[in-house]
Length: 119
Image (cartoon, rainbow, N blue to C red; front, side, top):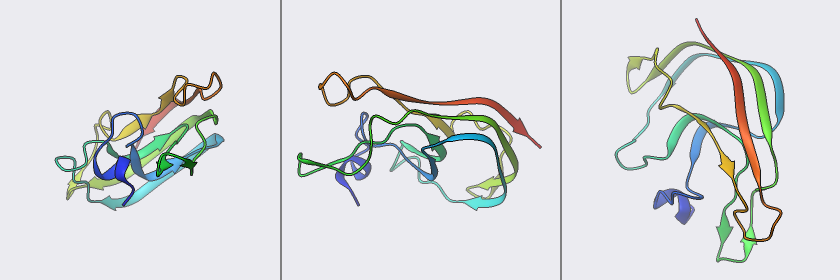
């Protein structure tokens, strides 16, 4: 219930069922059933990768906006979102990129998925 998430803050409000913050060679997700409320939370996803930053009371940062992450191969099989089998993941995966998010000259990082394999 952090305010950036509930208000869908365009800078800090991205969240997902699976959030990756590491460098990964290969990872698979299969037989997953998920309910998303995109109308209420447009920045919600099946999966996001990259830096996260949420400020609590504008002074305590609880995630790390300095962490770049990547996945070489992401395998997806039998993913059901809102009771429908999904083949198009373009609106369900998010690569997060921050450019100096805290105006400190350091808080720049990115997330990248190199290949997506759908089975």
